[in-house]
Length: 181
Length: 135
Figure 1: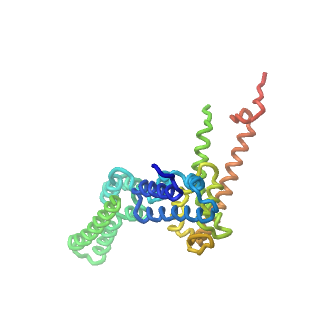
Figure 2 (figure 1 turned 60 degrees about the horizontal axis):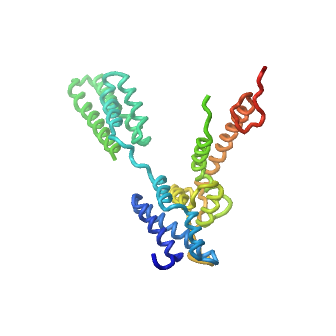
Figure 3 (figure 1 turned 90 degrees about the vertical axis):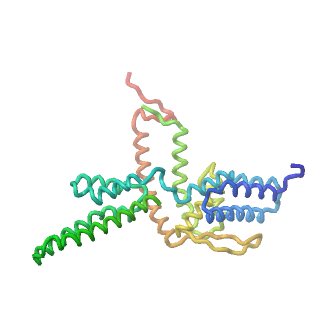
């Protein structure tokens, strides 16, 4: 650099470095951060009677290195999905959807897996817990209907059970999709 | 017995500072609305050495998105318009809840630390009186 560095040069350079360091942020957050920092510098310079390079350097020093500022923005941004596939959630869906038929242990393990999932919010955890419900309800209704009407078992069981299974599969697919997102 | 090295203690304090920072924002805004530069400066001073002012802006953005603070623009006599931050009702509620929990928390930690200090042979390198030994 041949000419003397002016206060404006320093600011431009700082903002340029910040723009470079923050490319990983979502566009909206990046624009907001750049605007906030630009505003901070402008407000400080407007207040100071002496607006030379030395003073501006102090302002920028107090702001911290642009890379550190960008990193702080990354830390406040919504956390990315945990690494690895949604294996835990798939296992939970299988155990809660089908596994409970085999006995209480499968159901219990499924519950533990579902509620310790880092990928599901409470809503999905509740839905996963309710996975056995459609088939259970179908079975109860079958029982009630056959007792009350003496209708042939197969005529009642099949449609109800199919409806229950279909609901379970639908729920399971949505839950796994959610875990992948 | 393992002794906690000073670096470890200061790093856990740094984590603690970061953790309470957002409630310090709410506390600063409790009395008055502040414009961004002023707020960030006070916050950096309050949270001690080594906090860069620029790193506090993302925190302000998050609090705004969460509805804990609101922002508005006002004209300034000396330069460009300024963004002012104010506490929202939800922010005030969060501050009140945190204040109560913080008091409980610090009281129990203080009590624990005091018990540790009273015990003979406590590992306190700053304690001027050496542990008494029976001959």
